[in-house]
Image (cartoon, rainbow, N blue to C red; front, side, top):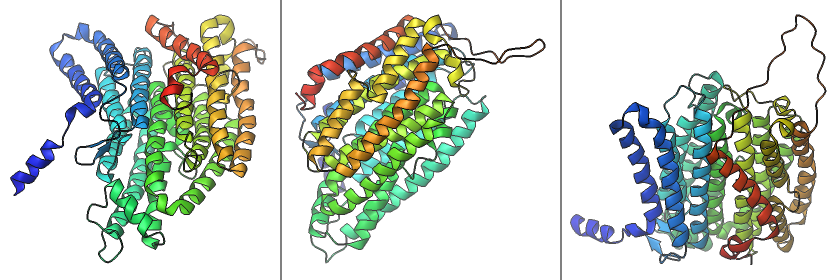
Length: 506
């Protein structure tokens, strides 16, 4: 009997449905094999192999974007393949490629193992791709923990830096707490949905389809409501929403800049990919979900912008500004319950956020010194004069994050706000607009530091002025990534093109 069940389960394993994830995993293993078999003098070529491999996988995914598995479930219901999932797979591949290029630049200044950084980045990206297609709590939790464990290592990767080790410890503690909260919520939902005597109770309640049916049939169950709140709280940690944002400033500051970029871009997007799925699963408790997310969104926007106003360390600033972006996106998630195009608006917002963040973090990687945790606004003084290319990319990236027209970030915010308006979320929309106005102050303060001379106190004889970090020359690969991110931010502000068509915005 057991053999027959295993054969049936094996027959449902359609491996071609997860071809991009398999290729990413194989590429990660290939990097480690190359590290063993190649002589040390040729190890510098391994990161380039990672980037070329990622580009090849990305190209293949774009070519086969209209997958034959769209709308289907595979692996006995563990995965559901949707249009949004396809887009998120592309998103994570692009994010991993950009982060890998920045990793080459950053690791040149560190006497640290290099190949492992790229292998872990690939594993984390593959787990994010699977997470965005989850249709079962087992798949969700395993993929989420794979991502989290990978980031435990990446955040504290520069182990010679005390701030990086501190950031890794804080992320470990807060990550363990959030995982416990999430798991407790899953256990409550699984337990109550499998209780005999309740309508639609089933032993398969960890499957999202079965759980959705149960919650619709039992809309007033207290334990189910508590489980839903706990699961949402666990996901809120991943996206950096209040009150689970306390880890962000310290972790963002202490982590290596490419890892900070990966956290800010991909980890946040992974959280929203699963949040969109869960909001649909919890549809029977729509009122509760809307109330919880609405309170979180408002407080998140206000806190993120207020806390960023006084920041002088740019890594803490970009982290706290990312908290406010999480609030804007949560408004889109709430709107997606009733407004069809809101999901596409969220995806486009994330895409614009990817472009703007890659531009900004790319500049930060080149401006920072050996201790990249210490990056103040003063380090960007006269950047546009001494490095016009970096100054221009920084201005475009920050302008897009601020939502200044005609950049892609403006269109992303506009689409999300239109969805919120159509859904009648007027109080949330008002808070969001106030938040955007507040954000202009600190984003443009950063641009001002880069483009206009800053007054400095006179240096008297005998004083030892603190030198600014030596800015790194821009390599060809990094220059291509930065120029592409900046140019795409401008182009997609005017014309959404195939991205808009894929997301149903055309």
